[in-house]
Image (cartoon, rainbow, N blue to C red; front, side, top):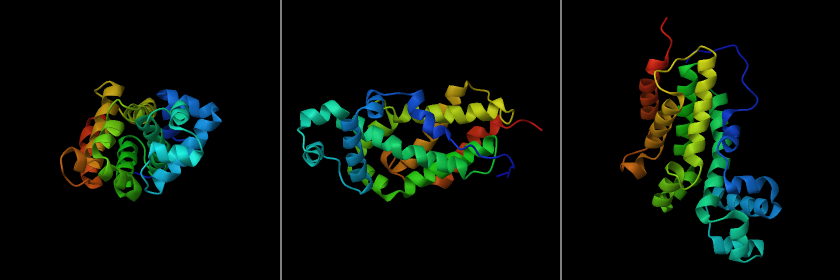
Length: 217
């Protein structure tokens, strides 16, 4: 990758994902103290490697399941927001660690993000325990996780294209979607195809997709 002298941003694209693709629970978490309390307790359990059981969570909070449902919705919705809250600093750290611009920046940020997903033990533990739910939440329409991932990659691409450091033969949203599907394919290869997740192979695929975006010298 090419080192650059331009300063890094203090706010990364990941932090804008929930604003670009809002959700009912995401909006509630901004203003509802009980929802925030339930979310913090559930997030702590998830990072500790524990299963998020709604009955156990309600008991921990001293409420019934009906109250908990009113605060945070169903289990998939709660897991989706927890996963996104973890993805935001992970993605932004991956971008900040990439001293490059243009296609190199996009490739570097996505590769590091995939690597971090693969090596996060508590995250992989959850995927192994609940593979069907994990795929549904991470790659489908059950929660905003996939759509937010596409939105922040699109933001990254937009910034580099606007600066003249990339071009694209595809609509921006389509290119972002392809890159996200590549990331998901290699980060969750064990769930999708029974293969080993591999950040190096993801990097090679990103480079292939992004080859056409590099300005001709």
